[in-house]
Image 1 (cartoon, rainbow, N blue to C red):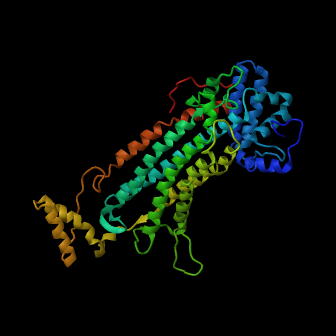
Image 2 (image 1 turned 30 degrees about the vertical axis):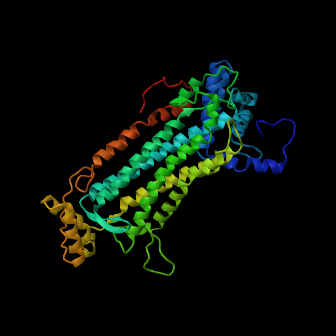
Image 3 (image 1 turned 90 degrees about the horizontal axis):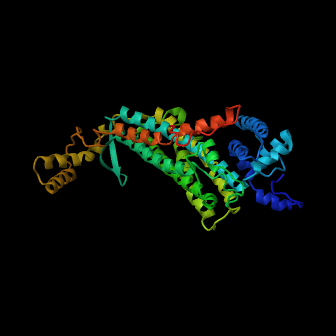
Length: 458
């Protein structure tokens, strides 16, 4: 079954090639296709294109299909082209010709656009929650080990004193910045393309504001041509937001692998989170962090993949955009998995509290001595030269007692300020508006009503 079928049959090889993995990818979108249809037909009834009784029956059956999706039992049958065709088939099997009325005023173009928008904003919500879980673990560890010193490095050479408070806290603040990027992508995603049809609107008097409110969008994509031009652009922008989170994870994973090695022994991973060797009985390998690093680097390549697919496309819809789904939709599960695994192991990670007992790290305190001499009146350049010569002569004596007080330093981590940044950004997503809108569509037994415009649900 194809929604566009006429009186001829497409060559089977052409059909196989053009459908590709679309049926597989559409399973990600199934319940969101149902949500979009619920809002669309509610709007159709309001403008007289459906009878009230028809709407009641259609909504009831769509809610049944939605529950099938929620249980993971939705399938696209053999011979059915895509999720849109499958949902319409299920409706017509139960309700007859009434099921064919749901497509009035829309195209598969804006139908897949609304599916992608609804799917993506849900996934971004889950990623934001996953980022916050990891953030909280990092802040907790930063506070727990704020007084435990460790070497800081530049050029992979020991440089200056750092602390585990700084190390854990640095990645927490990185995630706070990443959340800003995620919020920007979310805001661009949370706009309603439904009603743009094939990219040029419809002669039906559609009420696009109504579907916008019913689905809990912040606003609509107003210009119908731009709504279609947004296909691919949204995925690219979201991919950049995912890539910046993945960049933080990849760097953290590299540090963890390095610091867990015997040559460093700065941190210790729980043995149940490591793997062994088939030949070396002593090995406890940080495979989880190695895979997090690899998967995160793969995600960092996602924006480029999407750009290369969409870069030279003019205005209007093209089948090229179908391929974006194959790289875009599965990436969310991969990133969420990496966030979950990282948070789990950070929670169980132990730190070495006696790293600096080894005299090989004494040179990191040289800057402290230069600053002490300069504070006591010696010109900085003279103090620098004196300490350098002492180190060369082997007479430098390190004083491990340091006192840093400025904002963001060893003695003043500003974790409370970093937490405030994260919480402020999170509060501006207004996820509850989405949850409330979707609940009204899927659970109410009467006709759903849109949320009041401008309602400030957080």
